[in-house]
Image (cartoon, rainbow over all chains, first blue to last red; front, side, top):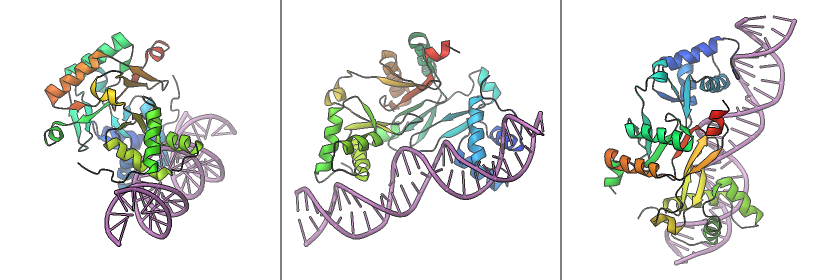
Length: 140
Length: 140
DNA sequence: CTAAGTGCAAAATGTTTGCATACTT
DNA sequence: AAGTATGCAAACATTTTGCACTTAG
């Protein structure tokens, strides 16, 4: 379709395996580099960056950025691509930095509204809600 | 209250003036450095970064990050702090990179829902919605 | 054999910091 | 005078790139 991988290599396999072993976990490129190096895998960081990019464009992993941290990558299990099981949105508190996972119907309603009224299809895996959490609001 | 500025300096004035002259415009730190240098202003980039930070914590400007670009800063005019005039949310298309400004009641409804049901107060100025715009969706 | 993929180390970004100097109060 | 703020240049963290070498098909 677009820029598709052509050759299958050991490095690509190593990287994909690693993500499959960590479904739902968000890992930075640096995390991946560190973990794989610790396991003694034969894969350089440039290759990791390049292959992360191609896994993203293949839709195998999602990439999102939470302010203040390096980009995160997360494996999307095949089930998740269909049913909306396990959907959760990320909220980050600007006060304490805490990341909160929320699963909520109303967000999906907004998603639907955006699509129908604004023609914009929100990707909830990539969208981060910034604000102030209840703990920080009350202790203020 | 917290880490508040103590001395008033020419540099702080230059920076604040610059933002006041550009309300509603989002500027990266680099933009600010470049514009002020071009105007021959006497202010170094370290000072700009440091003062941007303090203007943010004073709530005079907002800082938000759009994936793929350096952090943005935007002046919030005093009017905006009260009435919700001029509120607009940023959406970024992952395909074409376009930034879309949307003003929409439903988003505020979601904001209210988050506050009431999840105790999380979303900051809409800082939250960026990622997804696919109508142009890109149709040309797919 | 040839195109694609890899690794290394160097470069490019964007932002932060240490420290001596200058300015505010 | 005492404590902030500034400017410079160096340090940082993350990501990207050039290029010679290796590998898959």
